[in-house]
Length: 173
Image 1 (cartoon, rainbow, N blue to C red):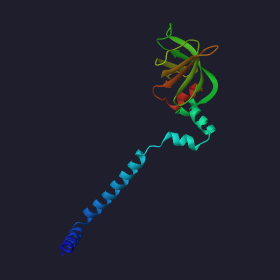
Image 2: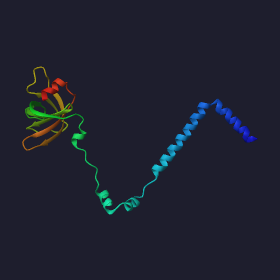
Image 3: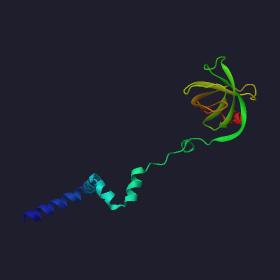
Image 4: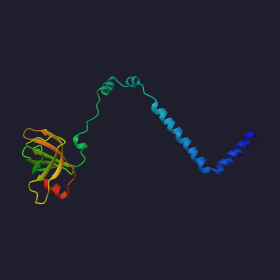
């Protein structure tokens, strides 16, 4: 009789508080699933069993495996465009005379690759202007990200401090 009274009281409470009862039931189910998932993840695999399951060749391949390196082109944020070299004037405090000539050999909406007779340290800020630019077009500020020596010149990888308008980008080729 006591159990029947308990069931009747529970039924009355559930009917009066249906949203709370359903929410509590869902919470209990979710917590139980999370606990089971965590328990399965904590279970560790025995490395000795894995090696024994495969052949000797498989174990050798696993020991010498290295992840594939990501090429520089895959990390690039903007599409690179090659084209005819465009002569530019470079202005930076790194140059003795304050200015130097160079050629844009690669360009994108993110920056320029410039061939120059002088090296510039990465992190340096430079001003770049196309020699054929019309009057009224100012220098563009770039940040040097890389500088490497080739046989004949230095290749300077630059990132635009602020992406210039398309009409100015077209002046670089």
